[in-house]
Image (cartoon, rainbow, N blue to C red):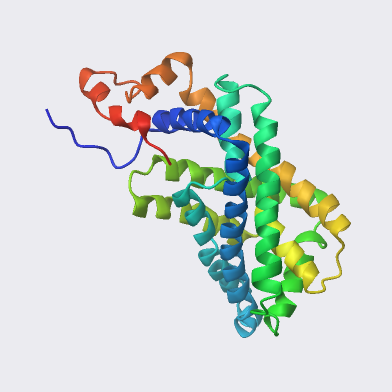
Length: 296
């Protein structure tokens, strides 16, 4: 008998998939994880650069309608995460969702979480700095005004003007939305659906001005390279640490409820078999068996 495959995975199936993804990431080689993280830092920086080019070049519109410029800047930024997800790269903020879920279900050892986060953190940082220094600063593609001035102003706005607790709270809002985007992308079965699933939450977080620790690894150091009155020490103590901790908390707002809702022992076993919780008929058990082997 032929069954129609739903266009979107059920939430319990997505939750089980996240646990399996955590196990797969845990089993990956450290060198591979670092290289994937390096690429992810560069990919996210492409989106960050496009957003800054749009906003920096819209001085007249910023004066008359700054809200529209923020919305437009947020609209183009998600290209970075789309490339990361479709290529299977390693982004720290998405691993803040996956690893706690796998750890709570005891699918991975406790040390796997800090080891992965440390490797991915420095991989993302290396990729972001490589992109900012070589492909943006030294290439001279945005060295003239209004872009250079905007880049400096943007870095000050991100890492100097807000207080520590404000950056922390903005980090929570950011990775709550990023985690929703990653969750939705994992549940989508086709490429176009994945793109839309990612795009909308990321658009919201950028337009609203929340803080993403990896995105800031590009924008703030780039501002420093262009002469913004910031030091590396100031950036680390204020922006980087605050946004990092805030991003962890934001991811837990998605990860922990998902474990509670969908990953009880009986629920996890059913989801692994492609069954729909609350409807464990023979029909539902046959639908989605192939999803066990699916990758994001």
